[in-house]
Length: 194
Image (cartoon, rainbow, N blue to C red; front, side, top):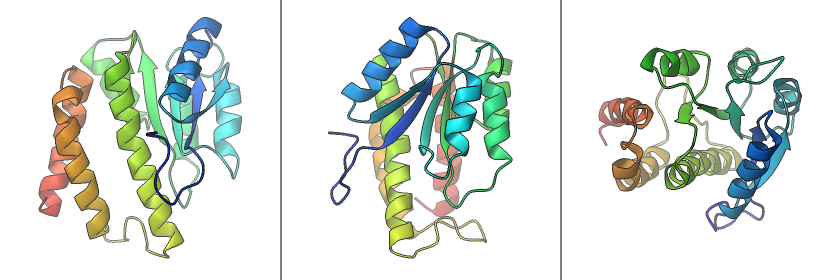
């Protein structure tokens, strides 16, 4: 199962936040079928509370437009709190303008997926972020710093991500948000010599 890795005994937990109960249930079921452990919440306040806990999930899928606290506000707030290992956020929205995608990413989201989501695209994106989470956790267990103070990253980590990225690239670039992610990832890999 994608949510499991060799040596890891439990699936990666993913917070899913949406105020629409039907979509929340569909998202929860989808995340579970992908092999991850979903943690569903119905609004931004609950999402922020769960993501601020010491045992917070390392991955989150946040709906942009929720009453009270929006997904963007949740992103901004969690980015204000330093953590040894970051929470990776996928912002989910029906907004389609490039300026809105940029706004979402500037809020602190790591990725952006448009509603209605394409299941294969979302599955691959979750796989990318889950792989990064597992590698960071493995490095932490080994006592290796995850990004170093000078911005370099462990050679093995980056090599694994580069190989996975080459496999996922054709599907990821099918959307404009995916193409933006691809451009950024290519820049990172080029700087690292991959």
